[in-house]
Length: 430
Image 1 (cartoon, one colour):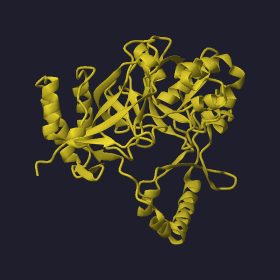
Image 2 (cartoon, helix red, strand yellow):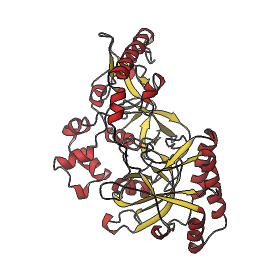
Image 3 (tube, one colour):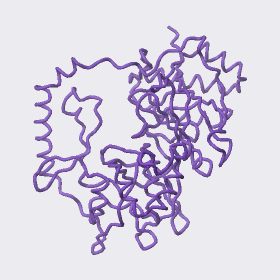
C-alpha cells in the first residue's frame, strides 16, 4: 500500500536484557474500549447522525463519460511493455472478490464479473499486436471511456513513487542506529462500520488505551513516537538503517529494499500507519522559503535535511503521520494486494476511482536521468489502478509507480506534471 510520510528524533534504546518484545496487555482496556465506542455510536445515532445526512450535498461524479468526438488519441509510449503483466495482476484481484461486487464509473456501475471480461477482452486484443489505427478503432467500437473531472484546473497532477534500496542490518549498532518499526502491540484498529451501518465507508480509526485514565485516545504522533525511548518494546524493529533520512524516504515510498551486510536483500512492505494526519515536508520547506517551489523534489529535500541536521526535528515533526513495516517477499504490493508493475500501476483516491480498473494517462516523463523537468516529453500510456496513498486525494491526483533503479529514483523524485486521466471499460452488449 502506498503512503506518503516523514521521520524522527533520535536512536531509541532497546531491551537488551531479555532480547524480547514486551507484549502489551489488552484484555481489560479492550473491554472498556468496546463500551466506550458503543456509547459514542449511540449518542451519534440519536443526536446528530440523521439530521446531518439530510444536510449533505451530492458530490460531483469524479468520472464523466466521454463522447466519441472528444476521445483522445490512444497510443502507448512504452509500446505496451509489461502492460499484460499489470492486467494479469488486476485479474488476480477481480477473481478473488465476489462476482457481484460493484465498481462505479460516474453514473454507471459494473460488477466484478464484467470487469474480468473487460480486461480479458483488452488483453486478447493486445495479443494481435495492433497498429495505432487498429487500437483506436477497437477502443471506439468496444469500450466506454470516462474522464476524470480533475482538480480546480480541470486537469490532473501526476507525481511518482518508487522502490528505494538503502543499507541496513538486522541488528542495531553504531553503524545502523535507526529502527524501522513493526506494527505496535498497543495500537487498536477500530472499524466503526462493524458497530453501525451509519459508519460504512468511514476509514478505520487508529487508537490506544491510556493506562492511567482508561480513556480511548488517538495513537501517538510522529514526535511522540520518537520521544519514547522504550517504543521498541511496543513495536519490534524489523531492521535498522544507517541513515535517518533513508528512513524518512522509506516511509514516503511505503515499501523498499534493504541491502544487508551479507549481501542479502530484505524486502520491506507496508504494515500500517498511526492514523494521524499527513503533512508534506516539501510544502513546509516551500512555505518557509527554504526551497523554491520550482526546485522542489525528493532530492532537494534530502539535500536540505543533510545540510541542516540541527533543524531535522523541526521539519520532520510537522508530519504527525508515521508508517510501520513488515518483512515480506516479492512486491511491492498495492492497496488491492497485488504486485504493482513499473510504469503500469497508478495510485489514486480509491474512494473515487475503480480499484483494479484499466486506465489511460497523458502526462510527462523524462527520456533519461537528469533531463530537466521543463524538457520532459509528453507521454501517453495504459495503466492499471492498483494502489492508493495518504496524500493522493481527490479526482485531480495520480501517483505513478516508477519501479526501482536510477531512472525510477530520478523520475519519482522530480515528477510534478499536469495531464489527464481516463478509465476504459468494455461496453455491455445489452
